Each structure stands twice: as C-alpha cells, then as structure tokens.
Length: 250
Image (cartoon, rainbow, N blue to C red):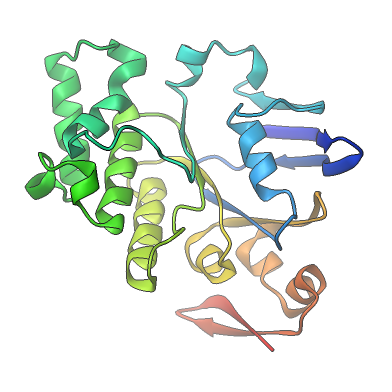
C-alpha cells in the first residue's frame, strides 16, 4: 500500500497535510502521535470511511477509491473504535459477519469451518454461544478480531484496539495483533495511543505531528530520545527490554 500526498481539510484547518509513505507488507505498522496529529483521519481515509481531499492510496496497483466495496472487503478488514454491531448477537454470529463479503447471508460448510477455526484461534469456543453484551471487554475485542480473521484478508486495519482495556487485556490484545502478522502473514496497520505498545509489538512506526509525517521507519529508527522528544514536546529517555526500545518521559 503506497500513500502519496494524502491530504484532508476541515474548513480552513488542514488535518492531514500531504502524507507520503509506503506500508511494508506482512509487517505491523503503527501510527502514533499526540492528540490531533491526524492519526485517526489517516486511518479513516485508508478505510474509505471519509473522503480525501487530495493524494492517492495505491492498493495492489489501483487507487483504493476505485475498488468495488465487496471486492475490497475481501482484501482489507477494518476494525474501528465504535464496533456498534447489534449487541444481541452471539459471539459466533458476530464472527460470521466476516464471511459476508464471500457468501452473503447464506453460509456454506466451508464458511462454517472458517468461522470455527477463527473462534478456536482466539480461544473463544467456550463462549461462542453467549451474547456479546454478556462477555467481558477483553473477550469482546477478541471476538471482533476473530471476525476479522474469518474475513480472510491480506490487510487488517485496527483503530486503537487497546482502547478501554486494562493493561492485562491490552497487552494480550497486542500479542494477538503480533500473531496476526507472524502466524497468519497479515499486513497490519493500526493506530495506537500508547507508544510503548507500538515499540514492543510493531515492525514499523509512522509518527505524525500536526498532520504531517515527523518520522517513518523501523522501531529502532523512530523510538529514539531525539525523535520522541521532538514529537511530544516532553523529555524522553529510552531503555531496552528484551532488546526492544521502550520509552519513559518526565
């Protein structure tokens, strides 16, 4: 996926200002930055949830806007912060939504097998017949990821997958995100507020400030004292855990 001079304005305010990056395949790329940096706006343009004002997103050799919705849904799975599908669905019924781009409302035996495999992959077998509003927040997030897995796409877009989760469930969610890439060969693009999750579980980081790319590169290239301090306007120090750079600020 190649993003070239992507821009978005709201009235007189430029929210995303001519962003150009290339997202590596079969890797986890996180977008970070302070509030108002433009992370979610970029995400929403990649997901075709809002229209861009300028630029292009080249996906598999074609402008993403020119893909038919059903065909694009077989290539890119999208999970936003507001997953407000009807709560009176069971976990299995929710996961079944992932097969709709392929089968519509009539599930085949193959679809059912894929749904069962996704449920097992996220260890949701014991609660698959419970309603979504009866399970915990962490279980609910895993159910949505299972739905995404059932969609069987090349790319997965996640907007703040750790939002409203405690540190235990948030860490488990990021481990699942890592597995999507390492075990299922997915290309994952996500927005994260917590930069240390980005550092520990990503391959690449795109740091945004005021709608522009402040730094794009590997985790080691972005997670430096100089880069983070300039982005967030606070003093950072970097320590390493398991060989990975983690930040503290003061």
